[in-house]
Length: 447
Image (cartoon, rainbow, N blue to C red):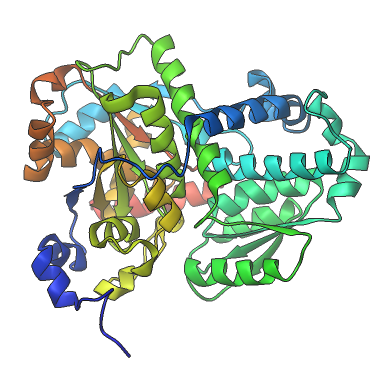
């Protein structure tokens, strides 16, 4: 068996990139992306994001009809934006002062599935349904899509399957909407997925296939089984352009929220966004949308568990999905179930690798600490993975690498007018007993 990672040994990689030693020792790091702002690959365009937004608008009447939680927003799936000054003060007690303001993008409150996956996952299910219905003459883009709630459409979609491989939240969003439309919905779930997510999927009518292996095996097996069924559409978290573009619609929507809140983002008012990252499709799609909305005035950092920094390794080595965290001796074991991914999405890396300012890592202990402090100070519940972005301001402002980034991009003098935004990616559907268990675990860590 070869000990090479790409064409180099682990020791050769560590000599070329000394930061890898700290990464391999489960240390918290900030890696700055040397390809940031380079010319992109052109895998995605702004017009495709606009098409996705238009499709979501067409589906709004259907969503409002079948999901009561979306009615207040007339069928649009969007989350609120909160200012969290008490959390900002608490973070300053744990680390450096944070000039400017701290915001929380509360995707934990996204209707239907309570996580960022409601953006990409639900979008791809809806696009699949629309394509099938139009192809069979059952639907026109000018129709009122509320008609999709009729039993005749459920009977039609029941002839088709939708499948996905997931550690949890993506499967939850796809399973709920796929089953509601009438699709035979199959979610291939890794051992890292929380039991309550599996239970909820089954309750909603999806079929859950469990694996005693990690995410890579679940998605590989799901993909293989789906390929054997011509009537099955596999939603591929590692390669899907539709997932990516669904996430990207978040950029324009956030811009509107910032404008409505009179929060400027321009050359003198930089925006720093900290996104939890698993396989990478969600944060990469959001980053693409943010760059479309704010251009060079937004700076996106991905945050991964110290035990599973697959996207960081994919970008640092340039190997994308040809590198695994296990190649560098990491175990891929983390309480942040949605981030427990050993290999990154090559598509996401190629589509947005030049748009990402850098990658950070965070320990599980800190995730629980942040989760508890956010509850104590602002009374918001999130799940451990969703707390990852809270390390962002501390890491950017409290490390040599962070100061280097601010200096290089002439941002040091602008930090008093800066906005720091952590993307709270999930937790809205976590059962109360699980929330209490998270809080208790955080309390034990503190003591």
